[in-house]
Length: 314
Image (cartoon, rainbow, N blue to C red; front, top):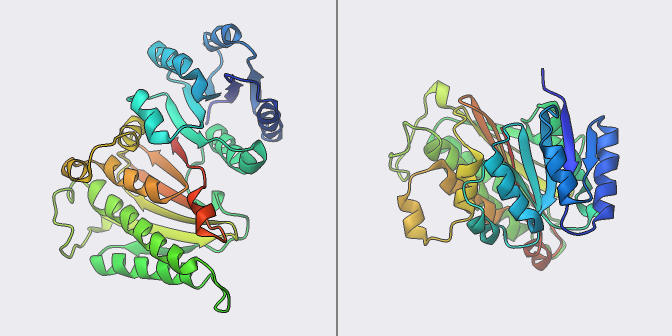
């Protein structure tokens, strides 16, 4: 049974629209919320060992408080941080933080109320897997199983065709470019699941044909709800840790150095650069699901300007 969750909020500057949005979401989900107007009040509440599981919402202006919480070793706390800075730049200052699980690109509360609702519901309910939580109700989900290199190529081709066909043939649209980009994204996701996450495959030549054992099968699913395109890739290993992923997202080493360093976190850095939201769902030693969400815009410039966010559930 999942332990009851509490949401605590404390921000470096007044953000009443966001606080009101979070309050409304928590009430709808029957989750207790405590807003701290001062850091002193926040410290007092944090010290209460009877709280149970806590999702602490803050922003990068409170980074010093988050570092303080990390040193307190609070196993029941997870931090969701709203960020205005480029996320890799922020992470260079906050390496190896186990407490930070969610990094949310700062936008108007009206723009990401949906994401906050999903985050709080998953945190409080414990049911973390599946792409359909992120796409609008009724969206059709397509799925394939990856056992061989032919399956991998077939899945990439299927996603490419799916995205390309979203555009109206008589209209000047960017779906051809989106198709190419999503093919690259899916390739990275599958490489990560087939090779980086699988201990047996980590040193295998990726350019050669491969065949996975039945217990190593990788599963991919994808769909589009009219606003977001989403793709999910699952492996049966459950090896990722949030601090490993955040470490790679924050690195600025050159490509050759990164490729030489074998880790499942490496592929996520490339994936994060190609997607708008990345969600890692991990059941330790059982399954890792990486979901990438992309918001298709009518113009490529709008696509490039989308905020990025990262979520880790495990």
